[in-house]
Length: 383
Image (tube, rainbow, N blue to C red; front, side):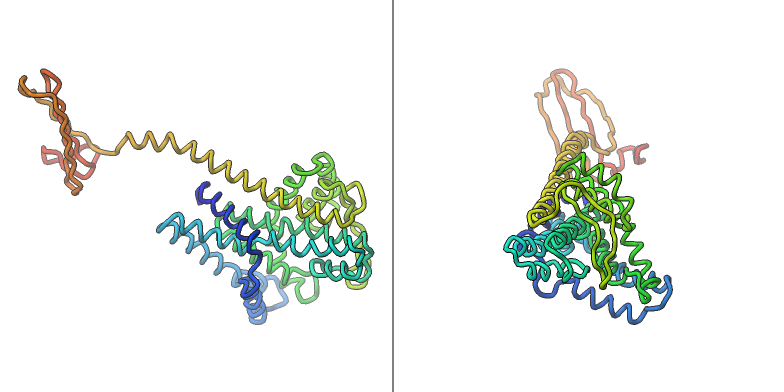
């Protein structure tokens, strides 16, 4: 997509997400999940090659179809192509969903209802929430918002900007397969290897752009310091920069011990500053929202710059035509009146003749189209 179409489609897709949220019925990702389970049942094997085959069978057909539809619609109408791209982006991002899942955690924490807060945060994290106190509930929700800011929003926006609808579809499906297969368990250690590694590769650049976005829009110095010092200690190459920079930008302490499957795991500390609370969750959601606005503004600026660069080129091209010129200069009668005649015929052998009679000398210039044959019976040297 060119920058103007990209800007229109991206803005429209984000607005659709904010206004409508995720489809309540028949979300395409639900159907994809069923298909992925069917593919797993047919392709499963305890080695990496089977996982690669299953990943390709699940992701590539939909991605190729999305690219083909964009190409076909672009050939018919840029507006149809932009509308289609906006619809695809709407289905592949989850900005409003992120807010809708985080807000109940913050609200119940403010109300002092710890059990309800644990239940709410249990819908967005995989740790054992029954053992969490209020501070750890707030930390879990804040971490989830920051990390999913990349996974659910910025990652899809990045690949959409780079490859159009096909990029957004590929990223979202790959991210979904990582959530289904990317576990270090006996069943998925080898079969899920491809899903996990491909998701890491697709997120490498978006995660660092997300971390930079958090740093720019928050406490920049603290965010950069935490990113540099704390991110390398995290086990995930992409979650580390995102959460370290996000925690630093918010000046809140995250990370630390967390319970998984009945065992407390010691994790590196993230961020610097105050202990997390309900307001930390709200601030994290606002940080993601401001980041999306920044990306939209940058995309709009790129579209405007593209238009400013192309405008002089278009004006110049309008004056320069790739036509052959045959000059036939002759004298006209001195008593001729001043006249300008132009006749153009749209056929393949059309001749455009312009005659200028200026007092004494009249020069008759005969312009021939690129595919027209000059009067001599041979083609011009430029033909």
